[in-house]
Image: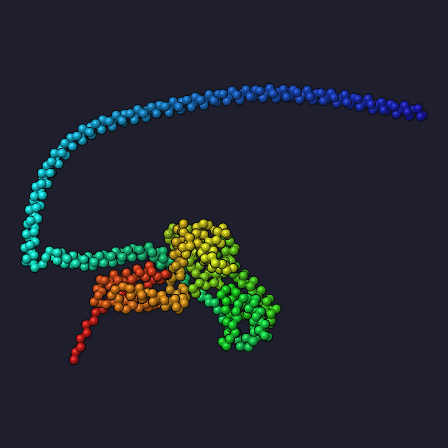
Length: 522
């Protein structure tokens, strides 16, 4: 039994060895077959590649020959055209040579005739000189006779004649200048009304005037003690939290808030209103209310900026610039609310640019942003025009808008047509009557300057600046100033006011000349 098992094992091993050998032989034969097939395929590929290469080579040679023949024919055509042009030029040259020869012959004939005429003219000139001498003698004799008859010398007569001609020329020149000015005004108004007058009429004149001081009204004076607090703790807490000086005096039912920053002043006013309404007034409550109020004001600033931009139809403005526009609501310049002024300038720029055929959206954008440099969150010594231009450049505004912002006070040079429009609209908004509230001293100084300009002219007796500086009445001496000269004087005074004064607005100059004949009956 054991022998049988050993024999079986040997047979199995031999079977495995034989199977392995057979598989190897079969595998080798399959590999050889695949190698032969690959060699055949490679040979076929090389044959087809050689055939294709020969075909491509033949095609390229054929194409090159065709191109050569084409270029050759074009070159021959070019040479033929050149030869034709040269032949035409040669013909033209020959024709010109013949013309020149003909002209030379004509010129020779003309020169001969001119020489003959010159000789004849010389003879005539000699005769004329002789006649002129005779005429001069006769003229001197006649002048001497006229001097004897009139009793005046010729020089005196000339002087008198010149003086009369001067006065006549002055009056005629004045009348002519007045007529020209009137015609120019009439023709200019037809276009200017569309650009300036209609523009101003279409813009609302509503304005908001803010001071450095706000008044907070209270129901009774008992609230003042609660606002002040024990030992002044509450009022000190409010002042430190808001940065606003609170003045509590004897003014009945009123507390004064003083601060240059109108935003902080508004925060203090709203905070006080909330504290007084709530009734709980102590330092911790004050800090909480002030923080909430600041957030509300910031949100309101952003909302005002967005509303303004939407109303004017301006799109794609940076959020920081929108916030700056909103801050304008709480800033005033010369008593004129800055936001209202900027809206007004933007509308003026849009209307004026559309009348002139420019881009009204770009002009509106520049008009709205021209004074953003006046509302910095941190104080700076940079002029507001340059600061606004820097902000506009920082937040991706166009070069025309940036230049208009920086150049509206001549800080930089203007390089586009929108810049002068913004400058003019800014001047119109600020110079119109009622736009700005000036200090009394500067107002009086302005009136005095207008009167001094009138007194600087000869013949002025009295001058009065009336109608808030919008009219100047000038009384002249009737002996020194004639009616014609009065019209000239009013024109000269108006021109000097226009050139010498800053932002004068529209000033009416009236020159009054009167004569009085007084007799007394006894």
